[in-house]
Amino acid sequence: SQELEQSPQSLIVQEGKNLTINCTSSKTLYGLYWYKQKYGEGLIFLMMLQKGGEEKSHEKITAKLDEKKQQSSLHITASQPSHAGIYLCGADLPYNTDKLIFGTGTRLQVFP
Amino acid sequence: DAGITQSPRHKVTETGTPVTLRCHQTENHRYMYWYRQDPGHGLRLIHYSYGVKDTDKGEVSDGYSVSRSKTEDFLLTLESATSSQTSVYFCAISERERSGANVLTFGAGSRLTVL
Image 1: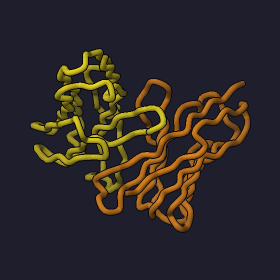
Image 2: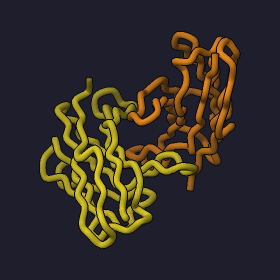
Image 3: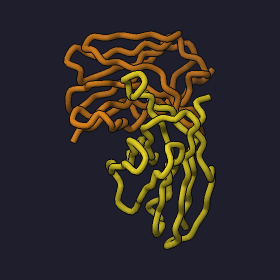
Image 4: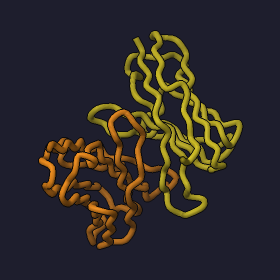
């Protein structure tokens, strides 16, 4: 079965620092989604990547999908306290695109 | 606001009792999902629905059943709750039939504690 591994599990950074979260799949990714969850709330969609080598940015967050489509990274530039939360990657299953599976999540804390 | 609500938001129950969580949407989306979120496990798919009366199992479906008699409602039932089912449950709807992409919109979650 396909699994998504995220690293690191937890991240504590000082405000203004850059950081990267990784999402690695055991199989080729056909659709990769990044979500953010604020503590105690539901998940909010950030970005979707589908093509090898694809890169998307929104404000200070950039997501990339590698050429082999087995790893994605989420990069935050000049982190702010508003970036704190849990980041999860999700992926379509290749044999059943009705289903979306998720990684274990990365908890980000940003301190002043 | 995508118009997805979960109820109840919080529930405490005892082992062996039945529990039903409700997910209601106003978007007329075909696809609906139930996930549970636990520390160290991220989100795990329990069941999903691809239309009225059309449902299928996810990764962790044992001990859970679902029903979808109307497009707008997707019910998750724990027939006999166990302590291992203490979790936060999230419902989600997908816009895939409109955009082709499986972008999910999530409800606010239902926190269930089984004593």
